[in-house]
Image (cartoon, rainbow, N blue to C red):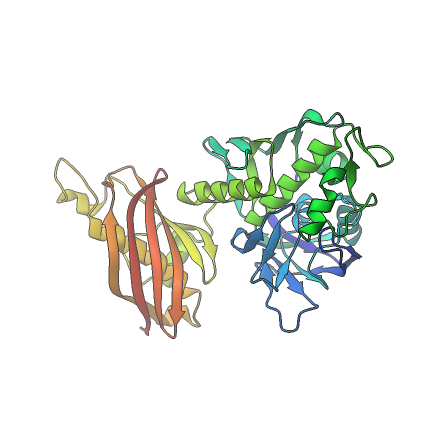
Length: 430
């Protein structure tokens, strides 16, 4: 089983080929990254192009593949096969340089990426990788007809159901534990597939320009046009690999059992967002900032320190923090005797403290600064917070100019919204 620490490639990886949809040639190079930098794509054929972080926020399209990007030009098509291979070997941080609009399709499977990564080796970096532990069942049905059920599990298991009205496919089912080498042996060789009768329509839409029998399993009405299949159920295996690659855009390891029926790229991304949201709002995951570190950044002390730990952090973007509400809170003595309810103003104060920790990472010498909140807008309380509740705060940075910023915050208990507000603050010297 791959450990929970960050990894990068030990030496550069180089591959080349054409994009299955763009039909354009591209050189792919994977270079070692640094701890905390994540997987970052660079379009080397575009002058001055900004790096594209491999993240759900940057998913632009899911039409016959997953595209990530920053705009209509600076983007990379069909990242899922490479992302699945990176996930399988545990590479969590690297610079991925591609000299064209699309990752080369190679033979249409995940195998050649995986082989190249194995040959280059991996190197431990020491930092912790976020783990999403499924603690309660999650169900999702998409408009496109994909259905997913996720349940708790001690490892990462995927069970996939695929159904096509075609004699070579029919209804296929497979289930795999993907923590070890099973992905390499049972999933990686499985190739992408398509139907011959759809070819002209796809090419008229600008898709499948580079598709051929060399990189795609092609089916006509009677069967497979290629020289055989690598597995009798190669189709459901490839769909499972696509799911792994799409979920890798969460930037996390998953502990849970995913049952996917008729999975699609759009459905996979929707599932990834639902899992990410459930994890953040449920207060799951190991603390990345604990109480001792919080004391270094916030000037508050008892009884006004209202943050216990930080469980999710994206520099300059968003943060998730937790306040455990106990019956021993001093404010419960007078609010209200015999009917303890956390004052609404203190819920917003706790939210603001979490927001202050997000800002502290954006400035130099944070121990010499303090955050003063200037205004609150659209404040709403949805339900009471009482002893025994765990408040989970999510804050997103909306705007940051000079020393003034605007954030939006939400507070949840057991996944239910209890408070929300827009906050404006200024960073000042202490």
